[in-house]
Length: 480
Image (cartoon, rainbow, N blue to C red; front, side):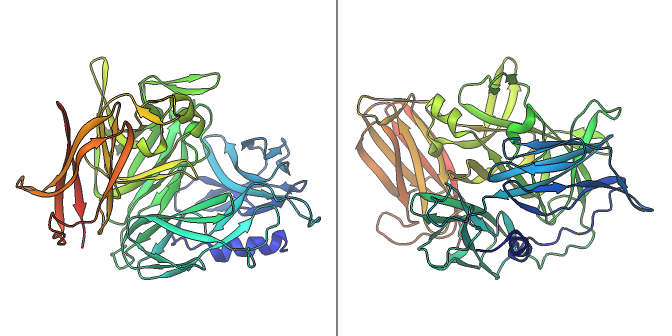
């Protein structure tokens, strides 16, 4: 067993996040200590460091909060008490300034006969790595803090083709993109989101992104964070009702913007806070956020980026279960209000990936406006099979791909289905399905070959489903 101090070293050495550059936004506050791993029952005294361009100072009059408060509590003297094992967000507010850090709480296991708690941890956690690099992942039981050296860990890699992961958890990257590293030990699963970036890109003169939210302050907003191109914002510190967004992230590649911008975060207009959380008053919508971009305090909506961002939003599995939505049916959409209706558009959204372990969904997005997570409501038949309420063609996954992608569709009843791949000239490339399919959520894999089994060239392809009078077409990109 390693102690908390050793765990801090593991956290520091095991995180391969690329430097985002110095934060020159003044005034600002920082929480000290900024990296904390505690054992249940431990107490930690925090303080706020107020920073101006002239130098730091300590202020003890900040207002503190912990989310969720079941993991730990903090009193008016800034003394944190660890209550239960898990991860919590510690937030300090000083006038119009705000700062947050993540605190890990673990059980100290003294009795070897005690059953471990149902939690598995992967380090490094969500991270950015350079293309061509190798990253050693490790799995831990959260209660014992001990690396699983004598336990069989099954490692997996899903998403874009960024490289390979060995049976020992060594990730070797060879392509730019993003993917999810998973670890399985028995019934326990954990994951880490990995972004592979190109560090050869000229990073001189990178621009700054200021993240704000609504506030009763005289300015009308509170600063949540400051990010430079090449870094990501791990969404956190948002109070109720916006706390439904905590846990997501946004990655800003170098070259994605040509100017300093401010992104104001709020819930969509069709989100209604209630006693049991936030309700999205649109069928199928289970999460949503309004990213309003401002340049010199002028709103530009939608705001198009030079390079697509990688955006991840979190969803609640309980809500999906209540609505009867399979996570595989989820996708990201831009939402636009047209009269009294909400119109959904997936143009400019690609490479959608559902992380069913951490309940997150990731996609590349070309602009910011209102972004929602939407799925199709399903019901349960007598044989307990999930049955869709309507015909639907879902986005293929992954997209872009090389050389395998999965095409998904839903059928409310047993139907005669034709699913075909075409090139941009409308010529048939591959007939994937031509026959009767059972009702439910269905999928088929395309391996980038034509009807005679030969590989096709890289490029854009269309896939179309026809079921009776229903017809829908999607677009996918094959990389080589």
